[in-house]
Image (cartoon, rainbow, N blue to C red; front, side, top):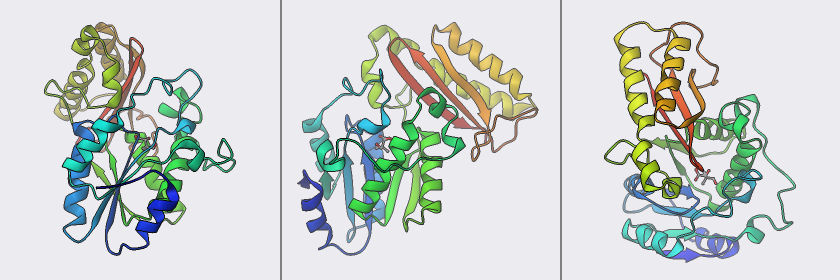
Length: 281
Ligand code: PAF
C-alpha cells in the first residue's frame, strides 16, 4: 500500500493509473464497518483496478462544541487495517493542504433537504461534507465511490450532489455493519462507557420492532414515531429525532406508512451522539 501525505504526490501517482479506481472516503478511527467498505471496493476494483482510501478529519463538518478535537486519531492502526484489506493507495492530507486559506472560501451548500434532521441538529454540517467530498472527488478522480448506509441523509445528499454537479462517478451504498447485539458500527462508539455501551443497542432493537410492526399491519406514522421515542427514552437515551420519512425528500410521513419509507433515529447517550436507520421493506 502506498501512502500519500499530500495532494500533489497522490496526483502524480494517479496520473500513472488507468481503469477502475474505487474510492472510500473516511475520517479514520477505522473499524469493521470501514473494513467491509474496503472489501467491497476491492471486489469492485478487481485485480486490474485500484482501491483508494482517504483519511481526513474534516474540520468544516464539525460545529462549535462538537467532537472535532476529541475525534479518535488512530493512524497506525488504520494503516494496518487498510494494508491487510488490499488497499492500493491511502491519502492522508493535512488541513493546510485541503484548506490552504485556513478555511474554505468556496463551499457547496446543499438545499433544504440538508437543513432537516442531522442538518437541523448540526447547522452547516452537510455543507462541510459536500465541500470536502467534492474536493476529494476532484483530487482522487475515482470511477466509483463507496459510502455507508448508516449515514443515510449523508449518502442521499451526496448522491444528489454527484447528479446535480455532473460528477462522472458511480455511487455505491454499502449496508450498515453491526456489532453482535445490533449496535451500528461507528467510530464514535469508542466514546461510550461500559454502562452506556450496554444500553446503546436499544436503538437497533427499536428499529427492528418498528419495522416489524409496520410490516404487520397498516400503521399511522405519528403513532409509531411516538412509540419509538418512548422505547428509546425508557433506556434513558435522549431522542434528538425519530422520524418515519420519505427516503428521497426526508418529508415526514403523514398517515399510513409505506413500504419504501425509512425510519431515522438520532439519540444522545451521555456525551455521544448515535444515529441509525432502517427501511421498512
Ligand atoms: O462519513 C464520513 O466519515 C465523512 O462524513 C466523510 C464522508 C468521510 C466526509 O468527511
